[in-house]
Amino acid sequence: MQFTLEPGLTKEITEIVKPKHTASSLGSGGVEVLATPMLIALLEGAAMEAVQPHLPAQWTTVGTRVNIGHLAATPVGMQVTARAVLTKIDGRRLVFSVEAHDQQEKVAQGEHERFIVHLERFIQQAQAKAEGM
Image 1 (cartoon, rainbow, N blue to C red):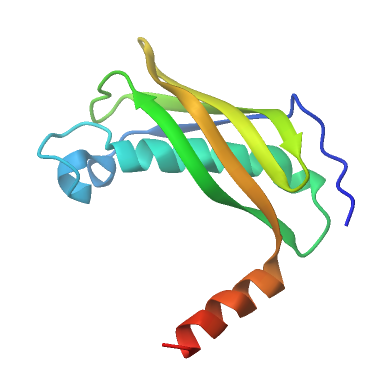
Image 2 (cartoon, helix red, strand yellow):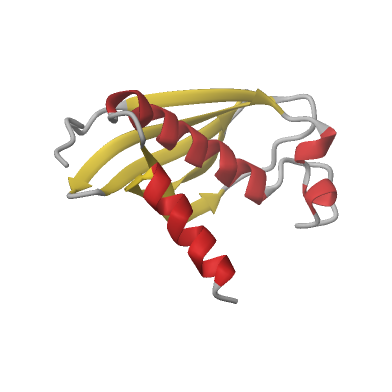
C-alpha cells in the first residue's frame, strides 16, 4: 500500500489539567501535577491526529517508541498544549518531533515513532495472540 504522507504534517492538542490527569491519580507519583504518562498520551494523540486524515480507510497508526524529556511541572487548572510534527517517513515507520508547553513554559520535548498498520489485521493478530495463551 502506498501512502501520501509528507514531512511537515503538524497537529496541536490542548487540554486543561484536571485531577484525573495528575501523577497521584495515575499512580506515577505522589504529586498533584500533570503526570508523565498523561503528557505522553497527549503527545501521542497529537502525532496520531496529524497523520490520520491522510491515511486510507482501515489504516491507522500505533505508537512504537517514545523518547521524551518531561522538563517542568504543570499544575491542575493550567492549560497544556502538545504539538507533533512529522519529520521522517521510512516506509510505514513515522518519526515525529514533539513538544508541549503550558501557559508559562516548555514542559516537554522529544521524539516519537509510530507505525502504520491495517486496523483489521492488527486487531486480528492481537486477538490471535490472546487466544494462544
